Image (tube, rainbow, N blue to C red; front, side):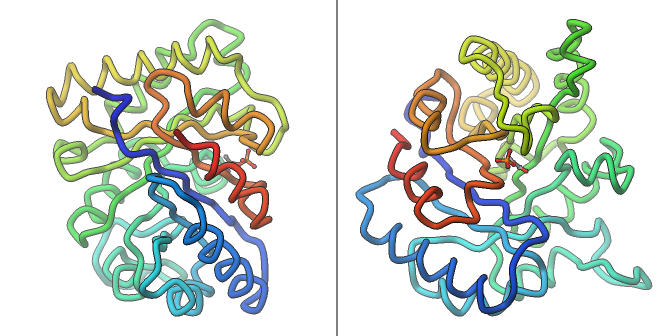
Length: 252
Ligand code: PEP
């Protein structure tokens, strides 16, 4: 069943660009996605200050807007944070949560990520929730165990039923140019699927599991055709429209 799931190709623009470059990149991705004969769902996730401008560029087209984080609470004295409802108000339909850079740089625990995911769902946003092991954890043979523990702690009960999306992103593969072998990716995605089915039943079967970590035009087709890989979360290569669109065209 999982092979029939509609793929998602999502771009994480991280802390890059200017208003002008964000508008130009969004326009190029929109034009390319309109021209591509793809059944994939396309999402771009600019930095917060660029969301409204990019929303205008994407309005009425096939590319959805996402953000890169939100707070767990709907409002309050939280300087520098943004709520899920604010993101929805800006035109976002998705939000990346629990990215390893936030887990590392902002000390986000599974419990914090879970609270954010719940807030996102309550605001009508689709979380793209990231899990993944470090190089040391993989070297110690703990990769699957670490990811299964992250899933148990990060996913709220309604996650799968409400259409949440997962992204398996080995920390050591992000921005490094290194990726796991195809067999390692397939094994981890199978383990994630088993964990989702065990906890969420049918809804767990229908949940998209993206791979992220140094996806490029050159390796995208091989990764995207692996069993239980339902799309990609793309960092560096999403900053160049042509590279991102080549990955999009590689989606089955
Ligand atoms: C990411 O940060 O989510 C990511 C996958 O980055 P990159 O594609 O650059 O490895």
